[in-house]
Amino acid sequence: MITISAIANFYKTVQPEGMEVLVYPVSPFLGLIKKWTEFYGSAKQLAWLVNRGGGASVSFSTAQAASGTPNYQRPSITRSRLYVVRQIGNEDIEASQSNAGALRDLLVEQRDLAMQDLKFRAASIVLGNGTGAVARISSGSNVGTATITLDDITQIRNIIVGNVYNTFTAGDSAVNTGDCTVTSIDEEAGTVTLGGNWSAASSGVAAGDYIVPKSDYNAVPKGVFSWNPVTLPSVGGGDSFFGVDRGGSIGMAGCRYAPSAGTPLEVVINALHLHDRYGGKHDSVFLNPMDLGNITKEATNLQRINTNAIGSNGKQIASISYQAVVVNGPQGPVNLYSEPNIPRYQPLVTRVGAWELWSLNEAFRLLTRGTNGGELAIYNADGIELRFGGYWNQICRVPRDSMVVTLPTAS
Image (cartoon, rainbow, N blue to C red; front, side, top):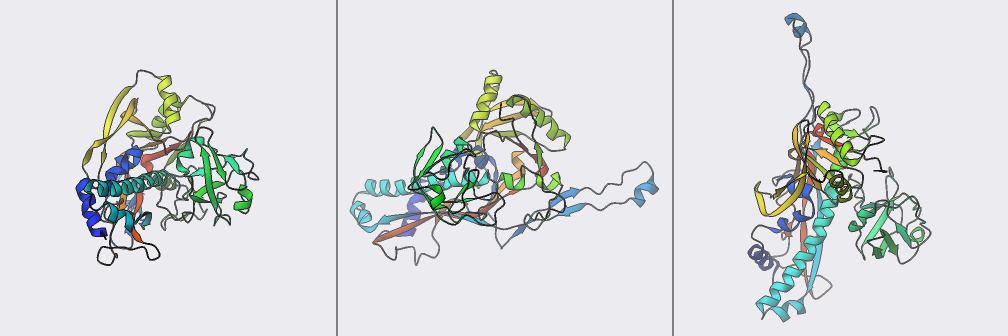
């Protein structure tokens, strides 16, 4: 039987840059942020400068009397994880061993399908809010039927036929009881269908609830909207983010802008200027494709550029690039990227360098340890199991350098 170690060597041959390059094309944000692969130990601390200390004065005695101490907060970052498992029957392996091409095709297919699942899930996580939600049931849906419509139909890309999901209400401590297995989706209409009624599959589900893959609720790595929540945590509200209370501080919870009117381009330009006033630094805006499309219709003469993805070695990946349109803001040119994993009407203004993916070795790879000498047999079937994934979390070094924007939906 072919071994996991042999498969690992095979993958190194057919994918010398590592499997992570198969993940990044789906998301400009995921591809552009820095990767740090030495996340050893149980946790690592960040150092947020919340207050410089103050006390500047034209009078020495006044400055001396007001001698301040910089205020740092140190969130203690822990890892989460993400897995995809594929199984190959022993008969299929042996039948293809005499044909190198057939064996290659068999393994490449399994690798590609696994990476497809990893990349879409990872991209939805890094642009998520930490709950693991992949979509929301629209307020007009009838959960007493088998079919619901998503609140943001562009998020239908996150729903996979055959997968099992749970539902929850915002702020709940646990998911609703019961599993929802998706039998079909309509990508154009943004509808999701189960084998029976949603209310029968998930006890207590209601219109407006969120959909999350089974076992993922509040257990996934922290996404953009965890570090920069749409609503600023309140003072005394009990916020505890990696052990830090961010209540009332944009220096720890990022900035936000939600105007009541304005075209998408007007809102983005205004957001850049407001973010500058808040002291945030920015070089990029990530928008849902539909929102970026509306901006390009407003200004048809925008310059376009291409930027390359960044790998775990810190170097650009020449084979992966993202196109952006450029607008001028108070800090110079800003790249606007089409990011399918950003919710509709929720652009993110940010400095790419403020974000990092911290992982224990590469975040997306073939996991081979603990496989009894390299071979991992399925205990109750005639075949082997391939485990892909990694152990990681996303961090923001300077939350002030991020601003969540809410577009007027009428735009």
